[in-house]
Image 1 (cartoon, helix red, strand yellow):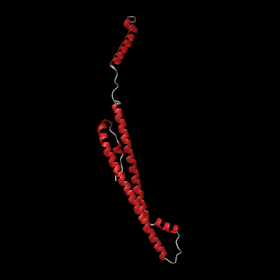
Image 2 (cartoon, helix red, strand yellow):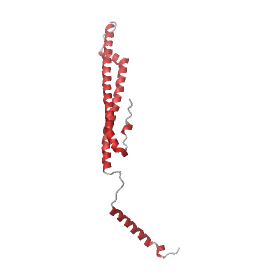
Image 3 (spheres, helix red, strand yellow):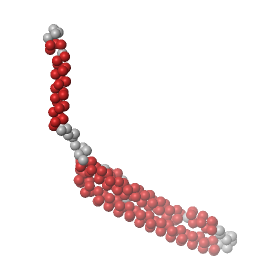
Image 4 (cartoon, helix red, strand yellow):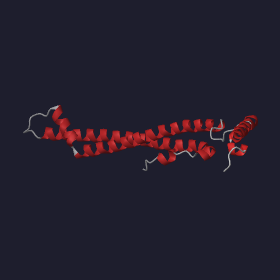
Length: 167
């Protein structure tokens, strides 16, 4: 199973409408994968439990059949069960399934965060956050008049234009 969800988390700000429409589909897909991983993890727990019980039964029967040995303690039986290759293999499967379930839980949470981020980006778009600054016409005219006045002041102070300096 491919657990690489980072690409699905990317938000293209220029396509917010499509991203918003696609969000529930992405969330549902990763949520379904998470639910399936939890079910697999539960099956692995169950298989481990059955394997442990079966191996413990075999160990107890083997100890009971060997009359030359002393009666085994619970710790001895537990050690035999824990070291059994079938139990170790079942534990490895459970670890693998738990890892996948945890990764998919993080992915599911990330897509919930993605939804919140989309909502924030839509609000920014609605407030024209990315638009060009809009200056009222009166203010723009006044700024142009001020620039013209400054320009005229500089020119009026220029001695060459007054005829005072010959070059």
